[in-house]
Amino acid sequence: MSDGCQGCKSGEGYSRPFSIAFQPIVDLRTGMSFGHEALVRGIDGQGARTVLDDVDANNRYYFDQQCRVKAIEMAAKLFPAESDLKLSINFMPNAVYEPRACIRLTLATAQRVGFPLENIIFEFTETEELDTAHILNILKTYREIGFKTAIDDFGAGHAGLGLLAKFQPDIVKLDMDLIRDIDTDRSRRLVVKHTLKMLQELDVTPLCEGIETRAELAVLQDMGVNLVQGYLLARPSFEALAVPVIA
Image 1 (spheres, one colour):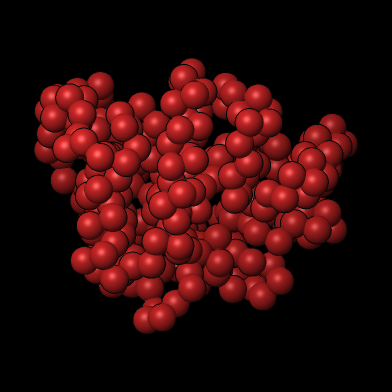
Image 2: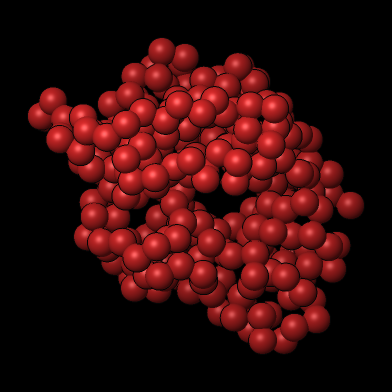
């Protein structure tokens, strides 16, 4: 393995201080947390936009690295000892130049604080068009190392089905726009129903996010969904772990 790549060594550091909030991912079979998603926040709990607005092409590598480190360090302190809780970390594919070189700090941090690699999920959102081959290389490398992988906001990104046909992650998170008003919108129910069937046949675990009403949750339960996330169950908790409530 090389000592890194030029992309990792160039650019500028990210200087704005920030912290992490955690939002539970709930397993409806147990009514308990399956894991927690790490969400970037301002140092006093301000929304993610106050932090992300300062991220650009020059500093995104450093920002991505800092997010991973802070999320793992904080989770190691907050998660119960010997817990099997999963930590879901968002990453920026365009901030990863060479997967095995760029993952070194993550691995060193997890080892230093004693956080199991198999309990870390790396998820990404296709917020911009990216090189599919590059994404596949990252996802396959992360799986080889021992991490779980997830596609976030499925149904709203650029590659979508094309990427899923080439690589099956551990988890696919259905975009909240598909979930919104699913109890009253037949078209959304049909799209989600057939998406769930496809994921089942691909042996991929679905996670429905953005649930805000009991009616939405009831429909998803009837469809056999087990993993869910949303304000109805628990809002993100700043530097703490929220306890989900299933009404």
